[in-house]
Length: 90
Image 1 (tube, helix red, strand yellow):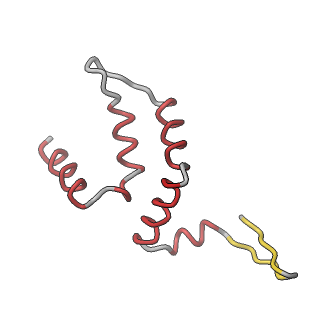
Image 2: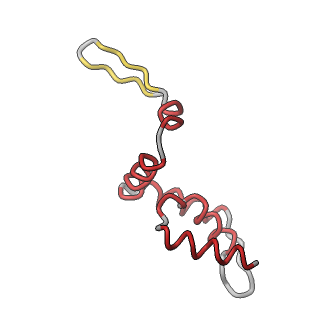
């Protein structure tokens, strides 16, 4: 929770409530802000370091899948369709 005061006015903001009420467009915009400010990059790098699981071909499949799942809002429609086609083929 974040508390902000303006000239003796105190406002309690519950970020969970705000997030729950946001539409997908607002979520995409917020994800874009977090990415541009470097927060998502830092998070992804921390998660990647925690979950390094390489296969014999050198690919970090678990990390790649995790990155895709948490970055879904930043994918274009075309990118989503490519991923769906690959998943449907398997």
